Amino acid sequence: MKYPEYNYTELIIGGYGKGVPRNNIVKLHQVNKAVNESEHFECYRSHFRFTKDYYDYVKTVAPDKFGYESNQGYAGTVYSDFVWLDIDTQHEELPKALEMAQAVLNRLIIHFDINTDELVRCYFSGKKGFHIGVPMELFNLLPSPQLNAECHLIAQELAGDVVIDQSFYDTIRLFRLTNTRHRDTNLYKIELTPDEILTCKNVEEIKRQANNPRTLDRDIYPDEYANKLIAYAPAVVKPNGKEDNIESVRKADNWITDLLVNGASTGNRTNGLIRLAGYYKSKGIPIDISTNMLKTWDLQKNDPPLQGDKSYDKDKIDKTVSDIYKYQVEKEFEYITWEMCHRQAPAYIADMEKSRIKFWYPMIDENSGGLGPGEVGYIQAFTGVGKTALAQSIQLSILERQGIPSLMISLEMASMRLFFRMVGMLSGISAIEVERHYKNNTVQQFIDPFTKKPYNRIYTVASGPITIKQIETIYLNCPEKPGLVVIDYVGLMKAHISNPYERMSLISSQVVEFAVKHQVAVLGLVQTNRFNKVGEIELGMARDSGLIDADARIIIGLWMKEGDSDEFRKIKLMKASHGNRVGFSDDAMFFGKSARLLPTKRRK
Image (cartoon, rainbow, N blue to C red; front, side, top):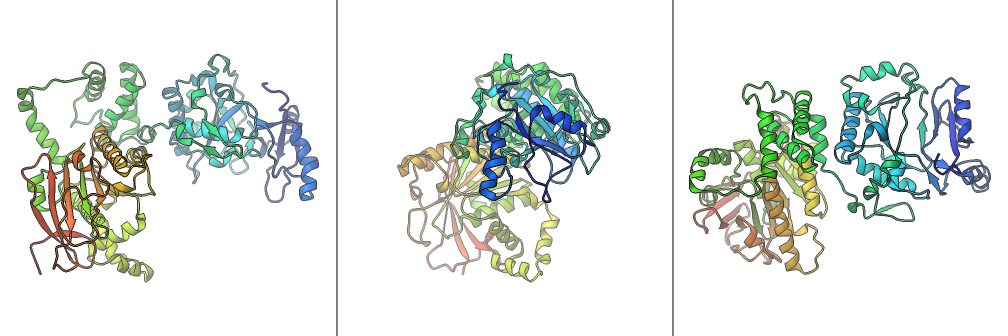
């Protein structure tokens, strides 16, 4: 045992809570004897190991502080043999917990190159979860009062986007002992091999094994792997145990686990296959192994799978993986001739017709060509003119008329406010009226339109100022791949540059890189530097514009024409890199009392 002086633990037999004191501190060698003399129900010991200082604190220091024996407030040095991940679900969904455990083990194998057979300990908790442990030696961590915080950060890194129990890393947290029974299920906490978890297709197999104690003859040999994962340890842990510089701890792309656990729906299966194949390629996984893994994933997780789908070629997966590997290894550059473009043009146009974002304003669409995947457009307007209203109106139009899902990342407005506005947009009433109907329980008539079309394909994430990397994470975590990402508004994005012009230039280039990397259309909202709502918008008016005008494919100006009533707006095409000409404009009018802007020819 490493650090043998850390040989004290808290032991509880028969359960805790409801007034049961937390003061039974024993040496480790006493644990098994005490458990064997019990009925093996609800037996726990401390997650961490302690020195005799812990015993002295509970028996001597605490009575002076509180008037009774307690471990409350202990802040001494601790150690643990493993970094543990407690995988649990909120509603006792054991099949879901199994999928999460499988995803974590796959991540340890693929992302961290860990030999799970030799290094990882796994347990079924006895009710609705799993415990996965990775040896502490791999991280070269020493006993310290902050070890719990360090373990917390490492566990989050190891788990990726799989949800783990965040409260598990309290220094005095208790851990159910192996081969003891859970009072609710009468099942034992038992050890499982990583392979048993990875290959399990039915949790009932595990529950059957948990009807009896189980001891596996497994040894863990971390020495030859020592220091292998040190780079994944947290960079800084403050003396008070709170994490700092968490962003320096590398995070895996959250979409990986989502695809591996949940599969892809019809319409997204090919995209999911391509993304996973590219990820496996980036990790150096050989093409034959990658292909086999993806075929297994397809059969187990996709409903229906690509394999057997008559609308796809029989060897669809083989061809796709081969193209991904060939492209990334052999075809770093591709030289295009006019003949190649001529042959590919019909398919290209057909694909673009499905994915090109239209604004659904006749003069704007006719002369701009729309916003294609990988392109960035901007709506420029003064504060309060209706930038967000126009963006939401476009979201509704592309879903209703083109079936294209979208994602609104709002950096200044709450999601509920956006929702109230959207309800009003479908009904012609104001957001304030929507709130009033909710208060009076008379809102159902205005909610009915949502049940008739798939408006759940309009996604919203509300946040304070964030970086482009955080926006990328939000995009990758979206339940389905959006065809349009709206950033409201670009000026609130984070960039660690003080000069306003250089700051906006950096943000603009980052937004373009994001759009190109993920081949998604991006519509950014930008405020102008003018001081009133009335009067025509021109290029160069964006506040601290930087390279925004140069980087954008399309720029639309929105303003109120002098003499118009508040219900009208003017929308002008100010830049269109692929279009015919600029300077064309459309008239828009709010629908009823709502914030939805629709094209109109009526002028008052």
